[in-house]
Length: 128
Length: 138
Image 1 (cartoon, helix red, strand yellow):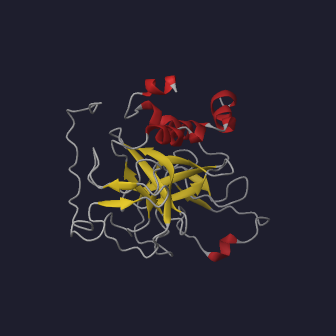
Image 2 (tube, rainbow over the protein chains, first blue to last red):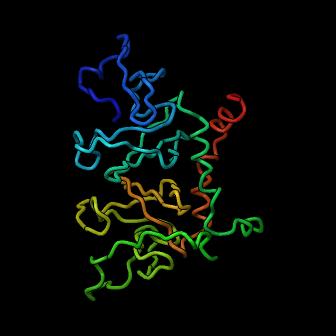
Image 3 (cartoon, rainbow over the protein chains, first blue to last red):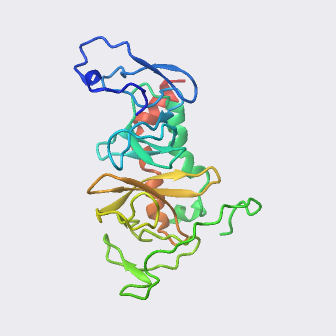
């Protein structure tokens, strides 16, 4: 979802030393395409932004290519966190697993963000 | 509770020209697929109610544009997480249980507050990430 030259030949076994990198579309960081724990990355570990190169509704490649900003944290039944991205250009939503070396402070900030601005007073929950 | 930032001009909601208005069967309400509650379409705070105010379940009927009724899936969509807009509005992220598609919708004024808070606190249930971020990384 983030690197420009995604091809089937790159999804081979991980024992091949991969030096492939991509540049983050937002912060410009050069990121290795493979995460340390194995799978391919699709977002920058520093600012967690991604790029819209896969079309998740129709399938296949997307013509959008815009930046995708992280908006929310979803939790699977297994307890693993997923990162919800929203495309800045076409408003499409995707979910991606969180890598081990992702910026933990940005993740935590997103996780507690709803509680910073509740739409109703939270005091009522104290009496439940 | 009054809106917290009344001074900011909000974008007007998109005009809705689909469904329900033609006076057919279920012209002014829908039945929730999760809890079978009859839900009226008039919701406080939003003109685009698409989920049940009690159990927050929705139905996958729209394709790309909200309200286009172009999806063939019609699967059940469950609330997956909460996102917050820059202006502080909460959005529910729904995920379709049959095709995994995601969609976002603003909360309505009568949505179940307890269900919303449970959704908001879901990332913090498991302390591993919080422990790793706030205790060992600093």
